[in-house]
Amino acid sequence: MKSRIKKICAYFMLCVMILAVCSRVNKVSAYELTETDEGKVLKLSTAELYEACVKNTKCDRLIVVGKIAKSVFWFIEDLECEVLDLSDLEIDVIPHESFIENHKLRKVILPKKLKKVEFCCFSGCYFLETVVLPEGLRGIGHGSFMDCPKLKMEVSSNIRCEENVFNRSPGVTILDSEPMCGCCLWLWQWLSDFKEKTF
Image (cartoon, rainbow, N blue to C red; front, side, top):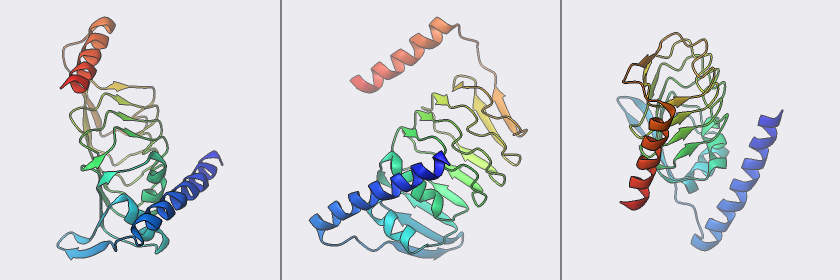
């Protein structure tokens, strides 16, 4: 129930954002749906995302680029696609329950600048087979990939995983690395943050 209320609020917030953009630009540019060997490919910016959702656009591969508000993720879920490419999306956190129980998704490429996947993001995505994790990913929230029985993925042990992240997802492997004590892990994360902010 809470999830649906959040989606309704997100729709409302995005409508307001789109109206503000449209009033400045006078029109939202038309998005492009192209046919390729991979099927129908849809490449969208944030402003075009709302228009595609309203028209209930269907595609095989969805590419979202640019900056995006966290609330917009619930619109992406409504666009039915098998491959979701977020690699060029400028966001560092994917909000909780963004793609929960999405039965269309087969492959997800996460943003290059992503730092955290919040709780239950991909929980219950029964047909999800592949998730491409970025190198800078630091944390995966509770139950994010729970109940994804077809998922095949290798996860670095340096990524902090909360409880039940991969529960009932037997194809996920946590790679071994040299164990770090809590202080060393904290120092490593602090240095990574410092490096990012400084350079």
